[in-house]
Image (tube, rainbow, N blue to C red; front, side):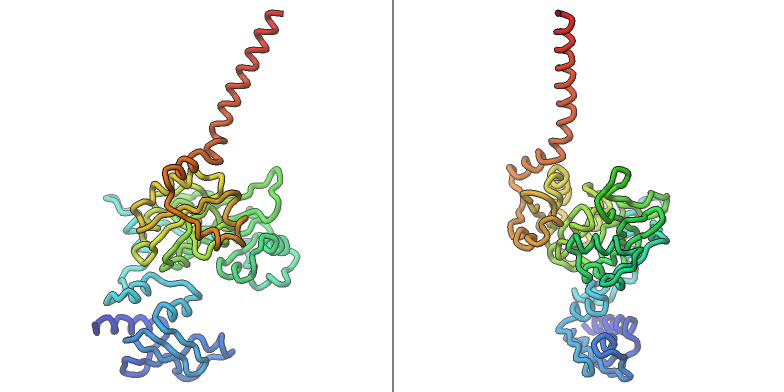
Length: 365
């Protein structure tokens, strides 16, 4: 057991700086004093008991009853994979980085494969958090649209939502994809009513050697360690859930499935498929792909709309999620877009039949 404590101490030293004390309680400079008291401590007032996993600052009175609370406070609410390993009681943090682990798990083959590069944010991208209460004119459209959708400042902060006033993505809100603690991709949503020449969604153009939609999940890092994780289509549906990842579409790629499998290794017990009401066929396909991936896979059957449109009622609706029955799966297969796909050919056949009938009547008259 002693090796476990040494591994934890090494990690704390890496994150908090050198310690004092011979243990099991060690003293560090407190990283929370500046937020809680307005200035940094000149003395090591944060005491961490590496045996019990508890921490307390005798200056700003920060307290953590376990390692998970401490780590989440250090990281702004998220957990790093190496921290999850320590929480689970492994002897040492993993030597590999998270990105190296992802590369090994998802891109391994006989041929040498390079890790995808990060797709950079647009150069015109600007953060909206600091100007949310009083935005300048160039950012007002983005802020006003978010407010009209019921997105408060805390969610803008949580998901690092930005906006492009000019450039290729002018008029679009920007949602960065943070994966393995790096910004690897982004997606966007038009801030306003979509006009004739506008697109509701715009993703960066695929580039060889770079991350693309199929190699990442929006909000991935933040749900690590969550017992229940929703699987949704886009960013606004993601913000409606307490803990969810967005596919940035309706299809689950093999890499995205592998990313979800990693979540299970670190504590996720249930995936809740929560797509739009008219995407039932895709929900059933995803359900089939995930059965066996997690201890439990359920579907949130919405009567109408999408998770974002049901934002206020979503906590109550989540109580009705269930593993779909045969009847549910048939309903999913026949819902929304499946009917739309069949409707056009049937209408075309009907139209051809009507035209033929008119032609016969015309020739007989």
